[in-house]
Length: 144
Image (cartoon, helix red, strand yellow):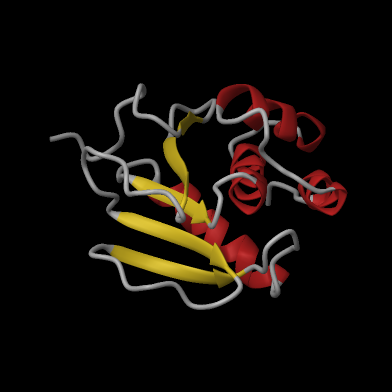
């Protein structure tokens, strides 16, 4: 079995480098197929345990991450792990916070910040990144 997602797996975003990251909403059932090997969960409170390695990032609904430095480190961890493992990023609905995080991953992958939201809306979900402050967060997110 592949260590990463198959490109046609529902909810999977292919970054320009070829890395694959699944975005999803936790209010929806777990998709069929292989489980993630690592998950980053963007919620206002600690999520329920999962059967794979995971990390929680405090990120209230319709808001921004509570700790920007921790968010940068967590997103970099996801980006690195996506090279060799099945990783997912998820929030409650799979659009706002997840879309914002995926857009930041696109920036880490070389997409200019001013193009990252459009990239994610085109390749993941047209409803990704829901609020003006989430769009500004992506614009200010820089590859380090």
